[in-house]
Amino acid sequence: MVSVLGFRVRLELKAGNSLTGNVNNVADKVLTLDTVEFSDGTKKSNWKIAGSEILDLKVLDLPKELQKSKGKKKNNTQNPSTVVYSSNAPGTPGTPGSVSSQQHKGAKQKGNQKRNQSAGYMEEPSWGNADAVKSSGDFDFSGQTAAFDKNSALEEFAVRDNIDESQRLVGLNKKKTKYEHDENVLASNRKDGWEDQVHDSSSSSVPRGTEVASRKLAEVLQEKIPAQASKKAPRSPSVAGSIYQFASVSGEPLPLVTPVSLVEVERLTNENFKLTPRILAENCSRGVASIIIKMLGGHSRLAKSNHNLPPLVLLLVGNNRAGARALAAGRQLANHGVRAIAFTITNHTKPDEFEDHTAHQLELFTLCGGKCVSEMKQLTSVLGSIETPVELILDALQGYDTRIPDLWGEELQKANDIITWVNKTSGVNAVVSLDIPAGIDAGSGLAEENYLNAKFVVSTGLPLSGLELAYGNGIVSKGDWTHHLVDIGIPQKLFKKGNLRKFDRSWFNGQFVVSMDLVEKT
View 1 (spheres, rainbow, N blue to C red):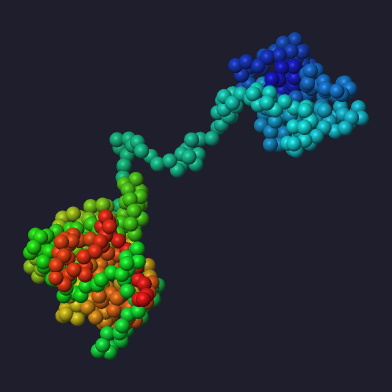
View 2 (view 1 turned 30 degrees about the horizontal axis):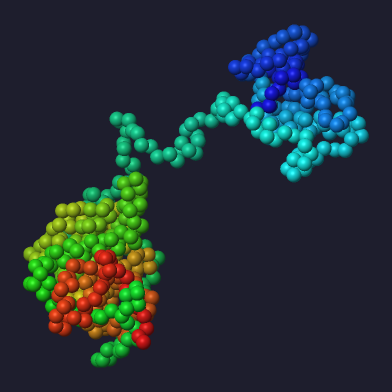
């Protein structure tokens, strides 16, 4: 702030009266004036007044030393009643007892312009032009900058600040971290009906009030999401040749495995290296879960500091090794805070009807917080009773060692119903298939009339020949599928002998999940 000692000022007081005087001293927010004259005509030689009592301050005249102009004739024709500065001037905040450098600059400019005009001198340079001001030599920038008192300015702002803390944007946006003993720590928007879901496939398990919601949900899906026409495979007995082949990220062509050969590879892995199907499923689950977590937004999406509800993943589970691996991946997701619900085409309340490996993974999945349904009606009811939509669908209905046409009765009907439902929602959900999409033969690449339209295909262990043939058959076009390969722990030593030596290569290069590119054959 610039010193205001010697200024002739007029003060408007909050009490309603006014006075004029020369500034003698400013200390502790108290202004001392000399030669004081009150509005009622009373005069005092000296008067002190607190800054809190001042409503407005106007500068009437400047000290004589500020009126002198270097190299210019002296002119004292200024009218004492002229207001040189007013704290109520637009855009200029008033400060009792002090004037900012910007305010002083404006007052000096106006006074000098008047004197120059009356004395016939040239006008001073425009204060809005920095270059002109610097070249004029009439203003000491470095001196005035050094005279600026930052602490006093901040104290002044604090005194004049009368905004309620609760109305500040910084207060409204700040997340509360400390709570009183009677306050609810968990935000209400992190609660819905998810924890109330039970694992009984009977109609009595549907929560009250959700049947109407499920019907509404089904109607919305039917009306707002157009059905996608299923691509029909050529029905010729021979398999069409493919112009594409799979390659690693480095461009190296990758050998493909038939479903029969992959079954044999996993059998030898179990017998010769003691890596059981449960161990392979565990290895597979971590790779698949890592792909899904990345698709959902990564660690920031699943952090506890995120006030939104967790994402929801739907698992389509067949009674096969792909279904067991999907349940293991769902358990990994649940451990990381993802909501996972499994739709099993085999009644999940009858574990004796499952294969041993699948039944074991189903039990672990539910123990770790996963939810299970086995009816379309129950699935839509659950989805209608919670606030989180399905963001990703993991397809494990078929895998590489079974086929949808091999199902029969109620299980076949459920499989076709869920495939149809997923195809109607695939425009708003990411669909990931294990090994190969349900409804497409893993060996020939031919498709049934009703098959699942996936966007991502995750090969487990080795890539299947049926994927490449599906492109040749016209089931899909390049770009329809994004391919990943997951390391499930098949020993490299297994590929050192016999007809498996073509797979003896570096598949993963220190990673557990790699991408596969589709390139034209040369």
